[in-house]
Image 1 (spheres, rainbow, N blue to C red):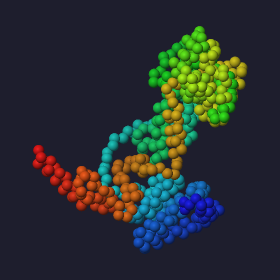
Image 2 (image 1 turned 180 degrees about the horizontal axis):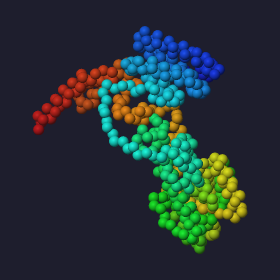
Image 3 (image 1 turned 90 degrees about the vertical axis):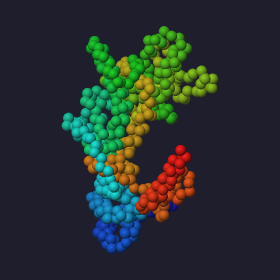
Image 4 (image 1 turned 60 degrees about the vertical axis):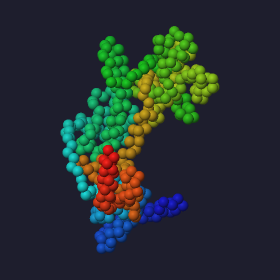
Length: 475
């Protein structure tokens, strides 16, 4: 079924089995589920292999036909197959059982059935009492009693923009941050765990940027009103460049859309010569390539970008004749002009809203309006953006390893489940070699996952006792 040569033909067979509107699959699996009890008359091994084959075909049909997920009949089939497999829990050492169990768990996640297949019950379990906090938290998005916090406060993390929006920056309500108690998650299971990690990682990184931009907006508003307030603590350090304007827009063959911005030179370098300004910009390490910046217009709309070029090259680079990126104008640098500096920026998110905002800024700049450029030194976009995007993709995915242990759907159950042995340990006469515990002595000690430990324990105890007596006799 994994042949590259027959892949298309095999997929066509499964598509044919599904039929129009799933009619063939409903008849086929309805018949199999109805008569699966007849398999119990045979040996458990035969029943396990048969269920493995049925579940494998059932899984492939659902994988190749997305419409099946929306049909209630397939959910009923999955539940029936789960019940049938549950009766074979005593035969869990067979590879076919492990394969069928894994396929069923993946199907249950796709069909939204949750943890219908229970974890294999351990012979021993430990009851652990944990203190829980019942402090009520204001839920996110539409689940909140007061309604959504802003236009980026969704209940599903896949809809949340990584960088903060204008309404999010201006919102005064506290962001929703899930606690450690899984019973209070607004989404159960693994998706709730991923939701928690996404929101906490985003708050640790993007939250600092959001608060820093809000402080700059408040400072600008207070300046216009003739008042002054204390700068809040625990915000990201920023460099602020005034009178920024979008000078030009160009397209780079690798980076895509480039935005050439100008801004007022800092007062400390306004009276310097060009060579001195260049050394100052190099020594200050401001606006380095890849630095994260935010262009803030007069309405408070943020446009997040990264620095593509400032035309700053050190003496070593000049000696090696390292040329700046092509298509970047020679005059677009931060040191030549004593009044204004030029910097080439690239959009962090090249989606339609950001491109439209850049075009609007370009039109307004022609009319003489200016913006503010905020640089966040020390903030590396690659340190959190790929992680957050990966968490968004993982939520709702069909496969997630150790889901029943990391985030059980019944968090109030205080059982510590024993993790079953890996698949390779359940094959044939496999056994774990414990002779390494004897300190290099030739003592055959091994244990199989499905056998008792009594003999191995006894042999190891005898060896350790002799070793201890030998050590005592030498004292």
